[in-house]
Length: 350
Image 1 (cartoon, rainbow, N blue to C red):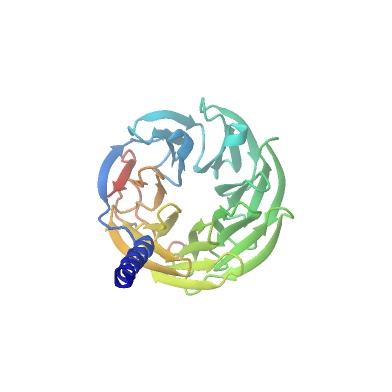
Image 2 (cartoon, helix red, strand yellow):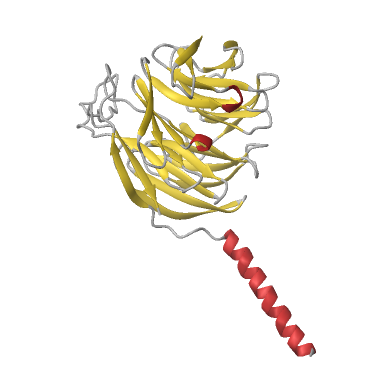
């Protein structure tokens, strides 16, 4: 009887260990192209595209594209609306409690307010040159636009539709994340650091270097475990940082031209997209240890990305590109120009 009980206990313990290992192990790889959706040219502008926003409750994908934002149904890939009239739009954020959406327009130096039901513009907030990325902070109930060349952030009261303050960030700012507890973190590509902003006092609380990465642009966050994921273009690295003290915990080399990091809490998967046409995929084995899962080859220019939390599919945008022009003193590393009218969405999944 004692022997049988001992065997039973060993078997149960073995299954328990296997269960823990299964939770800590990354899912199988093999992400591949599921769908390619051509969307054509945006009116009145050269080919340009930027951030993608996935709004999970409505199953809508907001696609920044030159002078307009296309809104796609995530399930049937049909365009359900267009928000138009911009000079050069970049980021989109939805503030659900207010029934409002916000779009940054770097050309107009404004943040536009729209109705997510009708896609009509309902207001605007004056910002600064190169108004680019945008984030909503639920703790302070404020919207922050990050204005690259202006080296600052415009703080907006979304309920009133007015600017509250501009915070000087001391360098060319890039993509932010909010932790939901009163902090917003932003990459500063000029200073090679991450800026931590207290959203209650609207002041810079800390600055943390991103070495061994450099020129950081893409960012995501594991809010539960307080981990920041910052990716840079030179040196081309992903770094995992502690969101409370800025300590770099782990780093990985990545391909050229990173522009998007996306973390999926339900699976512990971290996705990094680059202009070179790669998705680097990692798994959070523990908050202090990430492992590489696979690197997926996509298409050149597919550097902006969002994930569908229901299907785990990845949405990216790109276009065709011509050859790079000759280098000049002013532009020593010119980029390949996008071909007008070739804008498209790529959907990847397992």
